[in-house]
Image 1: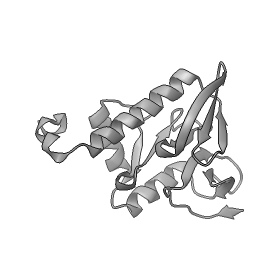
Image 2: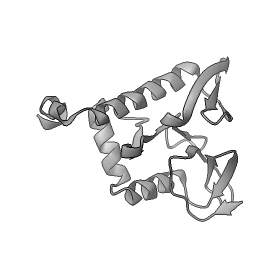
Image 3: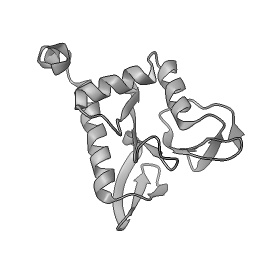
Image 4: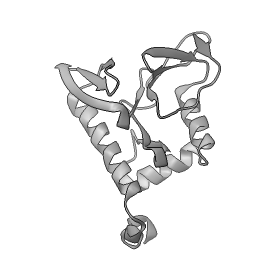
Length: 161
């Protein structure tokens, strides 16, 4: 089953870059993969725009808040807890974007394989090290916490200096 476009929802577990003549991404939702004609970057961009922001705006904010320059997690629908993080650089054709809040647990299977168990009991195997996955997971959790803190901390926020 394929689609021309896709908007990220609270049920989107993962997005994978995909290279075929027509489809450019695959989305993991429920227990199925949906092929999408738009690129992963375009899906992220359209989803941010549908939630009253831009991908560049969300990315820049996360960069400044976390003080990072690459593999930046993106708050897609922050008020619903939808934060996506890349496993490898977005320029890599094998890049996966994973939804933080849908992860139940993860574990190392082999030196460069991580298995994610989602809250609905489904699994996803990724070709990445446990250290890389944990770093991205923790970075995204930190972003979520920083964005959800009470507003009285704003005067202490380095972005407001």
